[in-house]
Amino acid sequence: MFKGLTNHLKEKNVHSLNVVPSNNIELFDCYTGLILGNLYRNFPLPITLTAENFIDYKGAGAGNRATVEKEEDLFMGTLKWLADVGYIHFDGMSGVSFFEVVLTNPGLLILRAFPEGTDTAQTIGEKLSHCSNSENEAELRELVTEALNLGSRMIRPMTRSGI
Image (cartoon, rainbow, N blue to C red; front, side, top):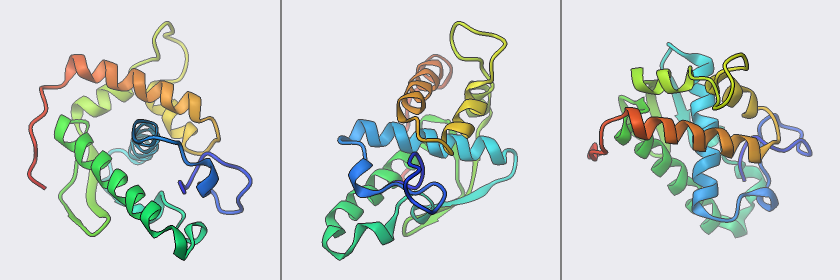
């Protein structure tokens, strides 16, 4: 279902239904890693993020509409949550698209940190931007956990944006 993390599909960054993580937290971690990696790669330019960039609609087929809707809801929920807690900012949304999405200052600082236990490796953001083009889901989720842990110490408490 995701676009990314598999090499058996022709399109770059496409996930098939049979490799979709099994629960909401795993899906959230994967979406978070792919979103943050994409934003880090494009920083400081705001970009449009849409579910079509992350969900393989062709592979879903007509019989999997409920799965696609769940994926869309999780994608949108992940983006809204990242904005609510202060990692990212977006100017608007329509359907399953978010416009003018960019990392916030705290989001950028977190992604510019080095993974725990090292100061000579790539930053968390650099690693996430490379993970989004690989098939290593475990590494992606580990980096997301590290970024979220760091963020919990840096970013103010969550306030709902109302979007």
